[in-house]
Length: 512
Image 1 (cartoon, rainbow, N blue to C red):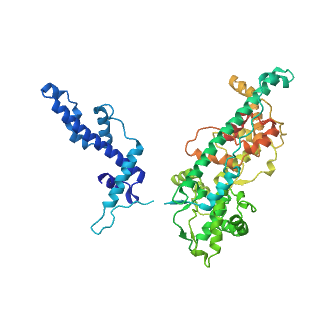
Image 2 (cartoon, one colour):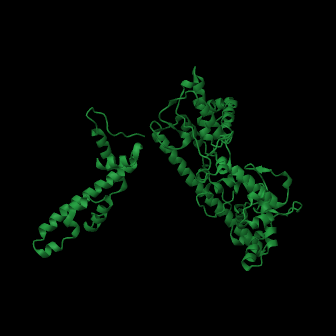
Image 3 (cartoon, rainbow, N blue to C red):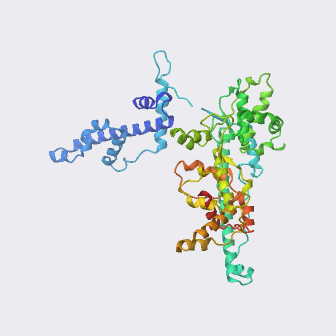
Protein backbone atom coordinates (compact mmCIF):
# COMPACT_ATOMS: atom_id res chain seq x y z
CA UNK A 1 0.00 0.00 0.00
CA UNK A 2 2.87 2.36 0.84
CA UNK A 3 4.55 1.71 -2.54
CA UNK A 4 1.30 2.12 -4.49
CA UNK A 5 0.28 5.39 -2.85
CA UNK A 6 3.83 6.72 -3.14
CA UNK A 7 3.96 6.09 -6.89
CA UNK A 8 0.47 7.53 -7.43
CA UNK A 9 1.41 10.75 -5.62
CA UNK A 10 4.75 10.93 -7.42
CA UNK A 11 3.12 10.97 -10.86
CA UNK A 12 0.47 13.58 -10.06
CA UNK A 13 -3.22 13.72 -11.09
CA UNK A 14 -2.94 11.04 -13.77
CA UNK A 15 -1.55 8.56 -11.28
CA UNK A 16 1.01 5.80 -11.79
CA UNK A 17 1.27 3.88 -15.04
CA UNK A 18 -0.07 0.40 -14.40
CA UNK A 19 2.84 -1.52 -15.93
CA UNK A 20 5.36 0.50 -13.92
CA UNK A 21 3.37 0.06 -10.72
CA UNK A 22 3.02 -3.72 -10.91
CA UNK A 23 6.69 -4.34 -11.73
CA UNK A 24 7.78 -1.99 -8.93
CA UNK A 25 5.52 -3.86 -6.51
CA UNK A 26 7.04 -7.15 -7.62
CA UNK A 27 10.55 -5.82 -7.04
CA UNK A 28 9.53 -4.51 -3.61
CA UNK A 29 8.14 -7.89 -2.60
CA UNK A 30 11.29 -9.60 -3.84
CA UNK A 31 13.38 -7.24 -1.69
CA UNK A 32 11.17 -7.98 1.33
CA UNK A 33 11.55 -11.71 0.72
CA UNK A 34 15.32 -11.31 0.64
CA UNK A 35 15.29 -9.38 3.89
CA UNK A 36 13.27 -12.18 5.56
CA UNK A 37 15.71 -14.73 4.13
CA UNK A 38 18.62 -12.75 5.57
CA UNK A 39 16.99 -12.56 8.99
CA UNK A 40 16.38 -16.31 9.10
CA UNK A 41 19.92 -16.97 7.90
CA UNK A 42 21.28 -14.61 10.55
CA UNK A 43 19.49 -16.48 13.32
CA UNK A 44 20.87 -19.80 12.06
CA UNK A 45 24.40 -18.45 11.82
CA UNK A 46 24.32 -16.85 15.27
CA UNK A 47 22.91 -19.99 16.84
CA UNK A 48 25.66 -22.06 15.25
CA UNK A 49 28.39 -19.60 16.43
CA UNK A 50 28.83 -20.51 20.10
CA UNK A 51 32.17 -18.77 20.75
CA UNK A 52 33.56 -15.29 20.05
CA UNK A 53 35.51 -16.50 17.01
CA UNK A 54 32.34 -17.96 15.49
CA UNK A 55 30.44 -14.69 15.94
CA UNK A 56 33.16 -12.72 14.15
CA UNK A 57 32.77 -15.06 11.18
CA UNK A 58 29.14 -13.98 10.63
CA UNK A 59 28.94 -11.52 7.65
CA UNK A 60 28.29 -7.94 8.69
CA UNK A 61 25.15 -7.80 6.55
CA UNK A 62 23.44 -10.38 8.73
CA UNK A 63 24.13 -8.43 11.91
CA UNK A 64 21.85 -5.53 10.89
CA UNK A 65 18.98 -7.01 8.88
CA UNK A 66 16.43 -4.63 10.41
CA UNK A 67 18.39 -1.60 9.21
CA UNK A 68 18.78 -3.26 5.82
CA UNK A 69 15.00 -3.44 5.50
CA UNK A 70 14.81 0.35 5.73
CA UNK A 71 17.15 0.89 2.77
CA UNK A 72 16.01 1.48 -0.83
CA UNK A 73 14.95 -1.61 -2.75
CA UNK A 74 17.93 -1.63 -5.12
CA UNK A 75 20.35 -1.43 -2.17
CA UNK A 76 18.62 -4.31 -0.41
CA UNK A 77 18.78 -6.46 -3.53
CA UNK A 78 22.43 -5.60 -4.15
CA UNK A 79 23.54 -6.48 -0.63
CA UNK A 80 21.33 -9.55 -0.47
CA UNK A 81 22.85 -10.93 -3.67
CA UNK A 82 26.30 -10.77 -2.11
CA UNK A 83 25.22 -12.31 1.18
CA UNK A 84 22.77 -15.05 0.22
CA UNK A 85 23.87 -18.55 -0.64
CA UNK A 86 24.21 -19.66 -4.23
CA UNK A 87 20.84 -20.30 -5.85
CA UNK A 88 19.01 -17.63 -3.85
CA UNK A 89 20.58 -14.56 -5.46
CA UNK A 90 18.88 -14.69 -8.86
CA UNK A 91 16.22 -12.09 -9.73
CA UNK A 92 12.68 -13.23 -10.22
CA UNK A 93 11.65 -13.09 -13.89
CA UNK A 94 10.01 -9.83 -14.96
CA UNK A 95 6.78 -11.60 -15.86
CA UNK A 96 6.69 -13.15 -12.36
CA UNK A 97 7.18 -9.79 -10.68
CA UNK A 98 4.50 -8.23 -12.92
CA UNK A 99 1.96 -10.98 -12.21
CA UNK A 100 2.58 -10.75 -8.49
CA UNK A 101 2.31 -6.95 -8.54
CA UNK A 102 -0.89 -7.14 -10.57
CA UNK A 103 -2.49 -9.54 -8.10
CA UNK A 104 -1.57 -7.21 -5.23
CA UNK A 105 -3.01 -4.16 -7.03
CA UNK A 106 -6.30 -5.98 -7.67
CA UNK A 107 -6.46 -7.02 -4.03
CA UNK A 108 -5.75 -3.46 -2.89
CA UNK A 109 -8.47 -2.05 -5.16
CA UNK A 110 -10.96 -4.42 -3.55
CA UNK A 111 -10.31 -3.19 -0.03
CA UNK A 112 -9.12 0.43 -0.42
CA UNK A 113 -12.47 2.13 0.28
CA UNK A 114 -13.67 4.93 2.51
CA UNK A 115 -16.28 4.64 5.27
CA UNK A 116 -19.07 5.03 2.72
CA UNK A 117 -17.72 2.17 0.62
CA UNK A 118 -16.47 4.39 -2.22
CA UNK A 119 -13.14 3.35 -3.79
CA UNK A 120 -10.07 5.37 -2.84
CA UNK A 121 -8.12 4.19 -5.88
CA UNK A 122 -9.26 3.50 -9.43
CA UNK A 123 -7.75 1.70 -12.41
CA UNK A 124 -8.53 3.39 -15.73
CA UNK A 125 -7.54 2.63 -19.42
CA UNK A 126 -8.39 4.38 -23.47
CA UNK A 127 -9.69 1.01 -24.55
CA UNK A 128 -9.48 -0.13 -28.19
CA UNK A 129 -11.59 -2.63 -30.10
CA UNK A 130 -11.05 -4.47 -33.36
CA UNK A 131 -12.95 -2.93 -36.29
CA UNK A 132 -14.78 -6.08 -37.41
CA UNK A 133 -15.75 -5.09 -40.99
CA UNK A 134 -12.27 -3.82 -41.86
CA UNK A 135 -10.70 -6.87 -40.24
CA UNK A 136 -12.84 -9.15 -42.42
CA UNK A 137 -11.78 -7.22 -45.54
CA UNK A 138 -8.10 -7.42 -44.61
CA UNK A 139 -8.45 -11.17 -44.09
CA UNK A 140 -10.11 -11.52 -47.50
CA UNK A 141 -7.38 -9.49 -49.16
CA UNK A 142 -4.70 -11.59 -47.49
CA UNK A 143 -6.44 -14.82 -48.50
CA UNK A 144 -6.42 -13.64 -52.12
CA UNK A 145 -2.64 -13.62 -52.13
CA UNK A 146 -1.70 -10.29 -50.64
CA UNK A 147 -0.44 -7.63 -53.08
CA UNK A 148 -3.02 -5.21 -51.68
CA UNK A 149 -1.78 -1.98 -50.04
CA UNK A 150 0.48 -2.64 -47.06
CA UNK A 151 0.12 -6.42 -47.46
CA UNK A 152 3.20 -8.39 -48.58
CA UNK A 153 2.94 -10.70 -51.56
CA UNK A 154 2.63 -14.36 -50.62
CA UNK A 155 4.84 -15.32 -53.55
CA UNK A 156 8.62 -14.99 -53.56
CA UNK A 157 10.38 -13.15 -56.35
CA UNK A 158 11.78 -15.48 -59.00
CA UNK A 159 15.54 -15.98 -58.75
CA UNK A 160 17.69 -15.96 -61.89
CA UNK A 161 18.98 -19.23 -63.26
CA UNK A 162 22.27 -20.32 -61.65
CA UNK A 163 25.42 -19.18 -63.46
CA UNK A 164 29.06 -19.97 -62.75
CA UNK A 165 32.12 -18.08 -63.96
CA UNK A 166 32.73 -20.50 -66.83
CA UNK A 167 29.23 -19.93 -68.20
CA UNK A 168 29.66 -16.18 -67.84
CA UNK A 169 32.90 -16.35 -69.84
CA UNK A 170 31.13 -18.35 -72.53
CA UNK A 171 28.35 -15.79 -72.76
CA UNK A 172 30.97 -13.07 -73.14
CA UNK A 173 32.58 -14.96 -76.06
CA UNK A 174 35.67 -15.70 -74.00
CA UNK A 175 36.34 -12.08 -73.04
CA UNK A 176 37.74 -12.36 -69.51
CA UNK A 177 36.82 -8.84 -68.36
CA UNK A 178 33.37 -9.04 -69.89
CA UNK A 179 32.76 -12.47 -68.36
CA UNK A 180 33.86 -11.28 -64.93
CA UNK A 181 31.53 -8.26 -65.10
CA UNK A 182 28.65 -10.47 -66.21
CA UNK A 183 29.31 -12.94 -63.39
CA UNK A 184 29.56 -10.16 -60.76
CA UNK A 185 26.31 -8.63 -62.01
CA UNK A 186 24.62 -12.04 -61.72
CA UNK A 187 25.83 -12.43 -58.13
CA UNK A 188 24.61 -8.95 -57.19
CA UNK A 189 21.21 -9.53 -58.77
CA UNK A 190 20.80 -12.92 -57.05
CA UNK A 191 21.83 -11.49 -53.67
CA UNK A 192 19.41 -8.60 -54.07
CA UNK A 193 16.48 -10.88 -54.88
CA UNK A 194 17.32 -13.24 -52.03
CA UNK A 195 17.47 -10.31 -49.65
CA UNK A 196 14.08 -9.08 -50.89
CA UNK A 197 12.57 -12.55 -50.44
CA UNK A 198 13.89 -12.65 -46.89
CA UNK A 199 12.23 -9.29 -46.26
CA UNK A 200 8.97 -10.61 -47.70
CA UNK A 201 9.12 -13.60 -45.35
CA UNK A 202 9.55 -11.27 -42.38
CA UNK A 203 6.65 -9.08 -43.54
CA UNK A 204 4.42 -12.15 -43.97
CA UNK A 205 5.20 -13.28 -40.43
CA UNK A 206 4.42 -9.79 -39.14
CA UNK A 207 1.10 -9.70 -41.03
CA UNK A 208 0.08 -13.14 -39.79
CA UNK A 209 0.87 -12.13 -36.22
CA UNK A 210 -1.30 -9.01 -36.51
CA UNK A 211 -4.18 -10.97 -38.03
CA UNK A 212 -3.84 -13.65 -35.36
CA UNK A 213 -4.00 -11.11 -32.54
CA UNK A 214 -6.95 -9.34 -34.17
CA UNK A 215 -8.75 -12.68 -34.54
CA UNK A 216 -8.11 -13.47 -30.90
CA UNK A 217 -9.36 -10.11 -29.62
CA UNK A 218 -11.97 -9.17 -32.21
CA UNK A 219 -14.70 -9.29 -29.57
CA UNK A 220 -12.62 -7.54 -26.91
CA UNK A 221 -10.44 -4.49 -26.53
CA UNK A 222 -7.14 -4.87 -28.39
CA UNK A 223 -4.20 -3.01 -29.94
CA UNK A 224 -3.17 -4.17 -33.44
CA UNK A 225 -3.08 -1.73 -36.39
CA UNK A 226 -4.80 1.59 -36.93
CA UNK A 227 -7.06 0.46 -39.74
CA UNK A 228 -8.38 -2.51 -37.76
CA UNK A 229 -8.93 -0.55 -34.55
CA UNK A 230 -11.69 1.61 -33.19
CA UNK A 231 -12.24 3.08 -29.77
CA UNK A 232 -14.10 0.63 -27.55
CA UNK A 233 -16.48 3.39 -26.45
CA UNK A 234 -18.45 5.21 -29.17
CA UNK A 235 -19.34 8.90 -28.79
CA UNK A 236 -22.10 11.01 -30.33
CA UNK A 237 -20.85 13.08 -33.29
CA UNK A 238 -22.51 16.25 -32.08
CA UNK A 239 -22.28 19.55 -33.94
CA UNK A 240 -18.77 19.28 -35.39
CA UNK A 241 -18.04 15.55 -35.38
CA UNK A 242 -19.04 15.08 -39.02
CA UNK A 243 -16.75 17.96 -40.02
CA UNK A 244 -13.76 16.28 -38.38
CA UNK A 245 -14.58 12.88 -39.87
CA UNK A 246 -14.45 14.50 -43.31
CA UNK A 247 -11.13 16.16 -42.51
CA UNK A 248 -9.78 12.82 -41.29
CA UNK A 249 -10.71 11.17 -44.59
CA UNK A 250 -9.07 13.95 -46.62
CA UNK A 251 -5.90 13.64 -44.52
CA UNK A 252 -5.71 9.96 -45.43
CA UNK A 253 -5.67 11.04 -49.08
CA UNK A 254 -2.62 13.28 -48.50
CA UNK A 255 -4.52 16.58 -48.28
CA UNK A 256 -3.33 17.53 -44.79
CA UNK A 257 -1.74 20.74 -46.16
CA UNK A 258 -5.07 22.06 -47.47
CA UNK A 259 -7.28 24.30 -45.38
CA UNK A 260 -9.81 22.61 -43.09
CA UNK A 261 -12.70 23.81 -45.24
CA UNK A 262 -11.06 22.51 -48.42
CA UNK A 263 -10.52 19.11 -46.82
CA UNK A 264 -14.13 18.89 -45.68
CA UNK A 265 -15.23 19.89 -49.20
CA UNK A 266 -13.10 17.07 -50.65
CA UNK A 267 -15.03 14.49 -48.64
CA UNK A 268 -18.37 16.00 -49.62
CA UNK A 269 -17.39 15.94 -53.31
CA UNK A 270 -16.58 12.23 -53.04
CA UNK A 271 -19.78 11.10 -51.29
CA UNK A 272 -20.56 8.73 -54.18
CA UNK A 273 -17.10 7.15 -53.95
CA UNK A 274 -17.46 6.87 -50.18
CA UNK A 275 -20.78 5.08 -50.59
CA UNK A 276 -19.28 2.75 -53.20
CA UNK A 277 -16.34 1.95 -50.91
CA UNK A 278 -18.71 0.87 -48.16
CA UNK A 279 -21.11 -1.12 -50.31
CA UNK A 280 -18.56 -2.74 -52.66
CA UNK A 281 -15.13 -2.42 -51.04
CA UNK A 282 -13.40 -5.21 -52.99
CA UNK A 283 -15.19 -5.06 -56.34
CA UNK A 284 -16.36 -1.47 -56.72
CA UNK A 285 -14.50 1.44 -58.29
CA UNK A 286 -11.72 0.95 -55.68
CA UNK A 287 -11.40 4.69 -55.04
CA UNK A 288 -10.09 4.02 -51.56
CA UNK A 289 -6.93 2.47 -53.02
CA UNK A 290 -5.87 5.95 -54.16
CA UNK A 291 -5.44 7.07 -50.54
CA UNK A 292 -2.03 7.40 -48.92
CA UNK A 293 -3.40 5.23 -46.10
CA UNK A 294 -5.92 3.06 -48.02
CA UNK A 295 -7.05 0.68 -45.27
CA UNK A 296 -7.71 3.54 -42.88
CA UNK A 297 -9.57 5.32 -45.66
CA UNK A 298 -11.69 2.20 -46.11
CA UNK A 299 -12.58 2.25 -42.42
CA UNK A 300 -14.21 5.69 -42.72
CA UNK A 301 -17.12 4.97 -45.17
CA UNK A 302 -18.88 2.69 -42.67
CA UNK A 303 -19.53 5.70 -40.49
CA UNK A 304 -20.85 7.55 -43.53
CA UNK A 305 -23.61 5.08 -44.39
CA UNK A 306 -24.80 4.53 -40.83
CA UNK A 307 -24.85 8.29 -40.35
CA UNK A 308 -27.07 8.88 -43.40
CA UNK A 309 -29.65 6.43 -42.09
CA UNK A 310 -30.37 8.66 -39.09
CA UNK A 311 -32.80 11.58 -39.06
CA UNK A 312 -30.12 13.73 -37.42
CA UNK A 313 -26.47 12.84 -38.27
CA UNK A 314 -25.39 14.46 -35.02
CA UNK A 315 -26.97 11.55 -33.15
CA UNK A 316 -24.69 8.99 -34.79
CA UNK A 317 -22.28 7.39 -32.31
CA UNK A 318 -18.84 6.88 -33.83
CA UNK A 319 -15.84 5.01 -32.45
CA UNK A 320 -13.54 5.85 -35.38
CA UNK A 321 -10.25 7.45 -34.26
CA UNK A 322 -9.54 10.79 -35.94
CA UNK A 323 -5.77 11.27 -36.13
CA UNK A 324 -4.01 14.57 -35.60
CA UNK A 325 -0.29 15.19 -36.04
CA UNK A 326 2.22 17.98 -35.55
CA UNK A 327 4.19 19.61 -38.35
CA UNK A 328 7.81 18.46 -37.99
CA UNK A 329 7.72 18.46 -34.18
CA UNK A 330 11.48 18.85 -33.81
CA UNK A 331 11.49 22.10 -35.79
CA UNK A 332 8.41 23.22 -33.86
CA UNK A 333 10.41 22.91 -30.63
CA UNK A 334 13.36 24.78 -32.13
CA UNK A 335 11.13 27.58 -33.42
CA UNK A 336 9.34 27.88 -30.07
CA UNK A 337 12.53 27.87 -28.02
CA UNK A 338 14.14 30.47 -30.27
CA UNK A 339 11.00 32.61 -30.67
CA UNK A 340 11.57 32.16 -34.42
CA UNK A 341 8.52 33.71 -36.08
CA UNK A 342 9.38 32.70 -39.64
CA UNK A 343 10.36 29.17 -38.61
CA UNK A 344 7.22 28.94 -36.47
CA UNK A 345 5.10 30.03 -39.42
CA UNK A 346 6.57 27.27 -41.61
CA UNK A 347 5.72 24.57 -39.03
CA UNK A 348 2.26 25.98 -38.25
CA UNK A 349 2.90 27.46 -34.81
CA UNK A 350 1.35 30.68 -36.09
CA UNK A 351 -2.13 30.98 -37.61
CA UNK A 352 -2.59 30.98 -41.37
CA UNK A 353 -5.21 30.41 -44.04
CA UNK A 354 -3.81 26.95 -44.89
CA UNK A 355 -1.20 24.70 -43.26
CA UNK A 356 2.40 25.31 -44.30
CA UNK A 357 4.56 22.41 -45.49
CA UNK A 358 8.18 22.85 -44.41
CA UNK A 359 9.24 19.70 -46.29
CA UNK A 360 7.86 21.03 -49.57
CA UNK A 361 9.59 24.34 -48.91
CA UNK A 362 12.95 22.66 -48.42
CA UNK A 363 12.32 20.45 -51.45
CA UNK A 364 11.78 23.55 -53.57
CA UNK A 365 15.07 25.05 -52.37
CA UNK A 366 17.06 21.88 -53.01
CA UNK A 367 15.44 21.28 -56.39
CA UNK A 368 16.19 24.88 -57.37
CA UNK A 369 19.87 24.55 -56.48
CA UNK A 370 20.15 21.26 -58.34
CA UNK A 371 18.43 22.65 -61.43
CA UNK A 372 20.66 25.73 -61.46
CA UNK A 373 23.72 23.52 -61.12
CA UNK A 374 22.74 21.67 -64.29
CA UNK A 375 22.57 24.95 -66.22
CA UNK A 376 19.49 23.65 -68.05
CA UNK A 377 15.96 25.01 -67.91
CA UNK A 378 16.65 27.64 -65.25
CA UNK A 379 13.97 29.95 -66.66
CA UNK A 380 11.29 27.38 -65.80
CA UNK A 381 12.19 27.20 -62.09
CA UNK A 382 9.85 28.39 -59.32
CA UNK A 383 10.65 31.90 -58.15
CA UNK A 384 9.73 31.68 -54.49
CA UNK A 385 9.79 29.36 -51.47
CA UNK A 386 9.15 30.21 -47.81
CA UNK A 387 8.01 33.63 -49.03
CA UNK A 388 11.54 34.54 -50.17
CA UNK A 389 12.76 34.74 -53.76
CA UNK A 390 14.74 31.67 -54.77
CA UNK A 391 18.35 32.33 -55.68
CA UNK A 392 18.72 35.07 -53.04
CA UNK A 393 21.90 35.05 -50.98
CA UNK A 394 19.76 34.31 -47.91
CA UNK A 395 19.70 30.68 -48.93
CA UNK A 396 23.48 30.31 -49.40
CA UNK A 397 25.20 29.92 -46.04
CA UNK A 398 28.59 31.56 -45.68
CA UNK A 399 30.27 28.26 -44.87
CA UNK A 400 29.08 26.66 -48.10
CA UNK A 401 31.25 28.54 -50.55
CA UNK A 402 31.80 25.45 -52.69
CA UNK A 403 28.07 25.01 -53.24
CA UNK A 404 27.70 28.68 -54.12
CA UNK A 405 30.46 28.38 -56.70
CA UNK A 406 28.84 25.42 -58.42
CA UNK A 407 25.37 26.95 -58.39
CA UNK A 408 26.85 29.67 -60.56
CA UNK A 409 27.24 27.48 -63.66
CA UNK A 410 26.33 29.53 -66.76
CA UNK A 411 22.73 29.16 -67.89
CA UNK A 412 23.97 28.52 -71.44
CA UNK A 413 26.02 25.45 -70.47
CA UNK A 414 25.33 22.51 -72.71
CA UNK A 415 23.90 19.46 -70.94
CA UNK A 416 26.38 16.71 -70.33
CA UNK A 417 25.79 13.23 -71.65
CA UNK A 418 25.00 10.15 -69.55
CA UNK A 419 27.35 9.72 -66.59
CA UNK A 420 30.51 7.80 -67.29
CA UNK A 421 31.94 5.13 -65.07
CA UNK A 422 34.21 7.73 -63.48
CA UNK A 423 33.33 7.29 -59.81
CA UNK A 424 36.35 5.15 -58.96
CA UNK A 425 38.73 7.40 -60.94
CA UNK A 426 37.36 10.48 -59.19
CA UNK A 427 37.87 8.87 -55.80
CA UNK A 428 41.49 8.01 -56.62
CA UNK A 429 42.14 11.53 -57.88
CA UNK A 430 40.78 13.04 -54.66
CA UNK A 431 42.92 10.72 -52.56
CA UNK A 432 46.04 11.62 -54.58
CA UNK A 433 45.32 15.33 -54.38
CA UNK A 434 45.14 15.74 -58.18
CA UNK A 435 41.44 16.61 -58.15
CA UNK A 436 41.03 20.24 -59.23
CA UNK A 437 38.29 22.82 -58.73
CA UNK A 438 37.42 22.45 -62.41
CA UNK A 439 37.05 18.68 -61.94
CA UNK A 440 34.80 19.31 -58.95
CA UNK A 441 32.65 21.77 -60.92
CA UNK A 442 32.21 19.33 -63.80
CA UNK A 443 31.42 16.49 -61.39
CA UNK A 444 28.84 18.64 -59.63
CA UNK A 445 27.13 19.38 -62.92
CA UNK A 446 27.17 15.68 -63.79
CA UNK A 447 25.64 14.64 -60.48
CA UNK A 448 23.10 17.46 -60.64
CA UNK A 449 21.93 16.25 -64.05
CA UNK A 450 21.44 12.74 -62.66
CA UNK A 451 19.30 13.82 -59.69
CA UNK A 452 17.53 16.72 -61.41
CA UNK A 453 13.82 15.98 -61.32
CA UNK A 454 14.20 13.30 -58.64
CA UNK A 455 14.08 15.63 -55.60
CA UNK A 456 10.67 14.71 -54.21
CA UNK A 457 9.09 15.63 -50.89
CA UNK A 458 9.61 12.04 -49.72
CA UNK A 459 13.35 12.29 -50.42
CA UNK A 460 13.59 15.49 -48.40
CA UNK A 461 11.28 14.65 -45.51
CA UNK A 462 13.36 12.09 -43.62
CA UNK A 463 16.48 14.24 -43.65
CA UNK A 464 14.69 17.42 -42.59
CA UNK A 465 12.63 15.63 -39.95
CA UNK A 466 15.63 13.93 -38.31
CA UNK A 467 18.25 16.68 -38.69
CA UNK A 468 17.02 18.36 -35.49
CA UNK A 469 17.76 15.19 -33.56
CA UNK A 470 21.43 15.10 -34.56
CA UNK A 471 21.19 12.51 -37.34
CA UNK A 472 24.54 11.58 -38.87
CA UNK A 473 25.50 11.93 -42.53
CA UNK A 474 24.19 8.65 -43.92
CA UNK A 475 22.93 9.00 -47.50
CA UNK A 476 20.12 6.67 -48.53
CA UNK A 477 18.77 7.49 -52.03
CA UNK A 478 15.20 6.72 -53.03
CA UNK A 479 15.85 4.01 -55.60
CA UNK A 480 12.58 2.42 -56.61
CA UNK A 481 10.90 5.62 -57.82
CA UNK A 482 13.95 6.58 -59.89
CA UNK A 483 14.80 3.29 -61.59
CA UNK A 484 13.56 4.27 -65.05
CA UNK A 485 15.40 7.58 -65.11
CA UNK A 486 18.62 6.17 -63.68
CA UNK A 487 18.50 3.35 -66.21
CA UNK A 488 18.31 5.92 -68.99
CA UNK A 489 21.25 7.80 -67.48
CA UNK A 490 23.33 4.64 -67.17
CA UNK A 491 23.38 4.35 -63.36
CA UNK A 492 21.27 1.19 -63.55
CA UNK A 493 21.77 -1.49 -66.17
CA UNK A 494 18.84 -2.91 -68.18
CA UNK A 495 19.15 -6.01 -66.00
CA UNK A 496 18.52 -3.92 -62.91
CA UNK A 497 22.04 -3.83 -61.49
CA UNK A 498 22.65 -0.68 -59.48
CA UNK A 499 25.94 1.21 -59.51
CA UNK A 500 26.15 1.63 -55.75
CA UNK A 501 29.16 3.96 -55.92
CA UNK A 502 27.39 6.26 -58.37
CA UNK A 503 24.22 6.44 -56.28
CA UNK A 504 26.31 7.11 -53.18
CA UNK A 505 27.91 10.11 -54.88
CA UNK A 506 24.49 11.39 -55.95
CA UNK A 507 23.11 10.99 -52.43
CA UNK A 508 26.09 12.83 -50.95
CA UNK A 509 25.57 15.67 -53.43
CA UNK A 510 21.87 16.01 -52.55
CA UNK A 511 22.62 15.83 -48.81
CA UNK A 512 25.08 18.70 -49.11
